[in-house]
Image: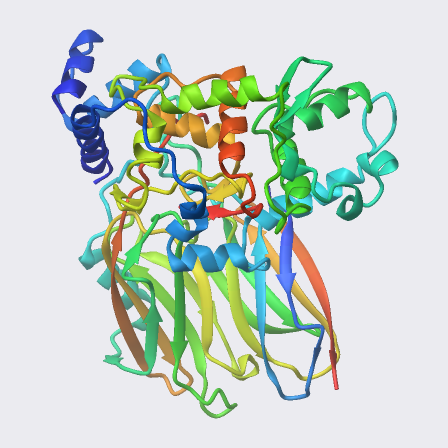
Length: 169
Length: 107
Length: 263
């Protein structure tokens, strides 16, 4: 840590915050190139996630059950987090899953993906890879053909790569 | 720019069998939140819609947000009804669409 | 969060540099070598092993298309001379980097591809880390997947392998740390949430989750040098090629895995 501060002072740059130390350290190494920062604008909050969920669900009750959200609890890189949602449903014309939505609470936006299904799916399950900006809770909501909503959540710890580079864009 | 697509559909299936389908496409899915060398955010550039049709009928649809990882990947299921064509289309925020198809024989 | 972790890494490496006194690290015995794939998470490994889910395969498919594309003053495609890559390129990537008598030094696979583009196809060299060069490299490397790394060590190539070894073992940068101190002496331990691999680069070019795209071994080594607070060598620098050559010699006999997926 002391070394980083020394580099900063040697570089004649004014540093105040940890972010500035990062910028200066990047400049020292890269000859002026800006170290890449992931900027979190006023990040989504649990309240924003709740509001986003309500925009899909309205005032209906969201019950726990039927839905299983599978995300590894410890993730190697937040840029690509494998994620599977499965819903317990016969997927018949009379009783099927209409939609599955995934939300988060700490990315800049609460929405991640929305999927529309029908009886032709055969199985109410899909997998994808998502981005998580930080360790947080992820929520999956399923809407059934009978108008009911069901949910499951998962807590995920997101770690950071050891060797990162300056941005070139 | 929507790049190369890689899809997987089992080439044959039994009628009524629930089959797994995978679809991946090359796309940067730029969130709009990353800061570039200028100090300004790199503009958002994402695929927003994915649709899968089976002999013309929609069997799976997804709306992507920036939190979908780059080179978006989906695996999902559908019932093997008839022989024919399974089509995958990705549309980006500008309305540009890319389509990839795969044939399936159902007996 | 990123900043805190970055400072954590710097603190760890500073401590490591300060406490390790030996400059010559202990080489990993041949029978204790493990592929870098052993050190990644199960989900990442599953992604790598599924050709329908591995994003590196998108680059391989792009390379397959480029292989057929006529280019340059020759009006020829790679296929026009080399035919089906599955036959003609089988085992080729496993032998790179390789000593080129006409240059009196080794080149890596990317450079060798460019040599053909310029001399044989009479076309322009593709820039390092360009989408097209990565695609061709991924396609050709994929043709050696499953085969043992077989770079040639002989009187001509040995000086360059040794030059690469010297760089690998030399302390460098503001943290005064050598590659060997992590990758020979501390492999298997955690660094900022990821296990430190032995640095056996059998899967290049890789799809790196951190980059969200495919990249070369030179790019990965430059990232490491940045993390070590050392000035990275420029793309194509002889030091990077020598280092590649040493690393692949160190991984001799291990299976090619291109395109691998890494965190």
